[in-house]
Each structure stands twice: as C-alpha cells, then as structure tokens.
Image: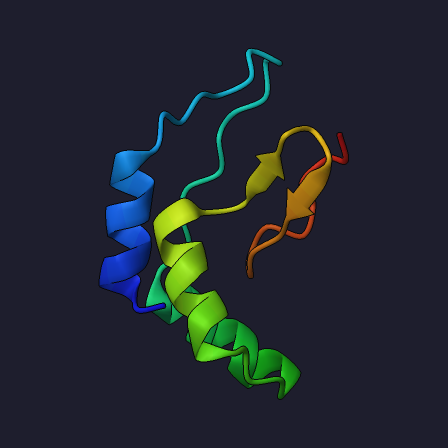
Amino acid sequence: MSKQEWQELYDSLEVTFADDGLPRAPKPTLATIREYEAATGFILPADYCDFIQVFGPGTLGRIFVIRAPGYSKMTEP
C-alpha cells in the first residue's frame, strides 16, 4: 500500500489510545528512518516505511507491538 492508502485507512478507523500514563511516541519521519538505515546498514521495506510514518509505533489490541526506528525503548505491553 502507498503512504496515501495507509493514510486513507487510518482516517477511516476509530483510533483510541490507552490511558496508561505513558506518553505517545511521535511518528517517525522519513529522515529518522533514513538515519536508522544508515546507522544499521539495514534498508527497511518501503511498505513498512509508509505504514510507520502514518500509524507510528505502539501496540495493536494489546497483543502486537509495532516498533519504529528511534523508539527502541518503548515498553512492552
């Protein structure tokens, strides 16, 4: 999916945030992603880069932890 398609999906969802006292991590920018790739030598898939810029890091249904470059210290659910 393209970044625009991910954004359209995001806009169509009812997104709720847990009231767990933890601050929400900002969504990574393309610059953050490229810095990670340069530092690690690992090129992230384009689809993931588009997705993570729209949705950002976090948890889905308290089951899936979605990580993003620059946010390695996110707590586990």
